[in-house]
Amino acid sequence: MKKIILTIFFLLSICNSVSSDTKINPINEGDIDAKINLILYESLTCGHCADFHKKIYPELKKDFIEKGLVKIEFRSFPLDMMAFNASKIAHCKNDGNSKILHFLYMNQNKWVKGSTIEEANTNLKNLLDSEKFDLNFDKCINNKEIEDHVLEDRIEGVKKFDVNATPTLIINDKKFDKPLDYKNLKKTLEKLI
Image 1 (cartoon, rainbow, N blue to C red):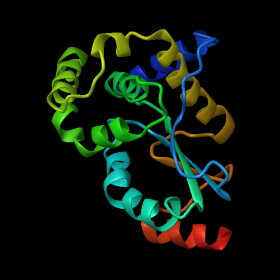
Image 2: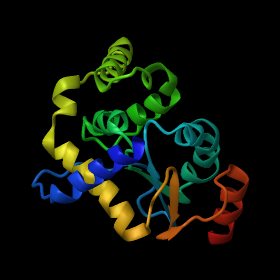
Image 3: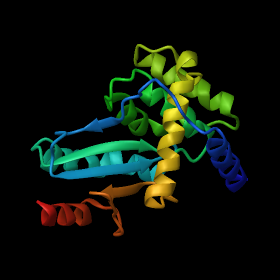
Image 4: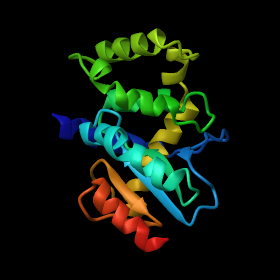
């Protein structure tokens, strides 16, 4: 069933031939002129992606991002409708900030549940309301420009980098092909500095 949903989602995104005049900022962190550019394709319902944010990202931030050595861009690669809507929420304020994105991963177990998309949306909305995020949930998930941006991320990931799973890490335009743990990542980054 999941494969069918993904296929429909992907075909819908290709048929939707995205072209928007509104520019949605990417979600990123780090010095724009950093020598090393990371792109992380991820789905907000992916447990391994949540693990990246909980276990790998804090060390990466401390050792490389805060020192101006690495810039990271978080790109949407939703694997289901729950992740698609959550991606739209993460981009909603259009400020490029990763606060909501990290929050959603840290609290994934609180909203990624329910047997329907409506239940998941309710869980997501209630969680965001409880934390006083200043956004209009319905307006965010129904925003066509944000939707197009999320779909563009996914399409580009497939076309340019052959992304087929999450998380997928791209380092200076090359797919990271080792197991994604901090030890392997640190070793690779240190060679590039």
